[in-house]
Image (cartoon, rainbow, N blue to C red):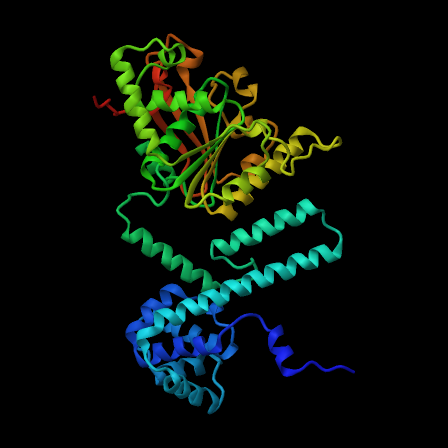
Length: 451
C-alpha cells in the first residue's frame, strides 16, 4: 500500500504561514501598543493553527473588555476559557516572544496572514465547486451562479456562511455602533433626501428590502429618481437604477428636470429659453459628477441584477422599477406556475440579494384596484398586487397617495402622503410631502426652492 511522503501531506494542507502567525502573536505580547492595529485588521479565522487561533481569540476578547494584556493575563484568561494545556501553553507563549525579532514589522506579518486567508477561501470555494460538478446534479448555470456568489463573498471579505458564535456577531455589532457614534449623520442609513421620511424610517439601511408601492400616476418613479439623485450626489457610493419601463434617455430627462427645475414638458418638447439651456447645462454638469448607474434592459431578472451589481465597486443602493415587470427569479416562466407564485419568488430573491450585496434595495410595485372601490382610497397592505409574500419579505413598505389625484377640488392638490405601512426599524405612520408635478419631484413640506 502506497503511503504519502511528509512533503505530499504538507502540500495537502490549505495555504498558511505558521511563522507569520507566530510573529503577529509575539508582536502583540512584546509590544501591546500594536494590538489595536492587529485587532482592526485580523479576525480569529485568519489564523490557521488551532493553538494560534485560541491565543488570538483570547487576546481579542480581552481587548474588547479593555483588559491588560501580557503573557500572564493571557494565560489566566486561556485557563478560564478552557484553552489551557498544562506547561504547553506557557512554554508556547514564551516561545512566541522569543522568536519574534521586533513588533515594528507587524504590518507586514498581517499582510502575509491576510493573503494566506484569501488563498484558503479561494481553495475552499474551488473545492466546493469541483464537488458540485462531480455530483452531476446541478446545471452549468447553477454552478456559474454559485461560483459568482462565492467569489463575490470572498471579495467582500466574507467567508462562506455557517453557524457563527454570538461572540463573533457581537464584535460586528460593536464595530457598527462605533461607526454610528463617530458619524455626523442623524440617521444610520442612506438618506432619501426627504428629512421627515428619513427620520421616520431611519434612512435606507444595508440589507433592507424597501417596497415603494402606489397606483399608476401617483409618482413612484419620480420618488425613486429623487432618492437616486440624492444618493448619487451625496452618499459617495455608486447607486444603480434598473428600469424595466422607461428608457435611459427618458430617465436622464427626468433627472435633469428634478435637478435644474425646468418644466418637464419643456424638456420633452425641446422648447427651451436661453436661461433654460443654462440651467440644463448646469444640471448635466452636476449629474456628470454623480455616481449614478442606469440599466434599461426590460427583460432583466433578479439573477441578472445580482450579477451586474456584484461587479460594481463601492455599491450603495439598488433601485428597481418595477417588480411586476420582472421575469421569474431564475429567468424561467414555467407553464404550471401562476403569476402570484412568480412574484413571490421574485420578492424572496430580492431580499436574499439585499442581504448578499449588503446594500438597501428599493423596489417599486404596482397596487391592485381594490382601493378605488373604497370610500377612503388610501392604500393598505392587502392592496399589494399579486402576492402577500411581498409584504412578508419587505423590511419597509411605503405607499404613495395624493388626494388631488382623485379629487381635483381638494384644498391642496399637490399635498402627497407617504404612508409607512410596515417598518421593521420603528413605527408606522404617515409623512406629508409636497408634490411638484412640473418638475416631477417630491420635497419636504417646508421646502423652499433656492434660486
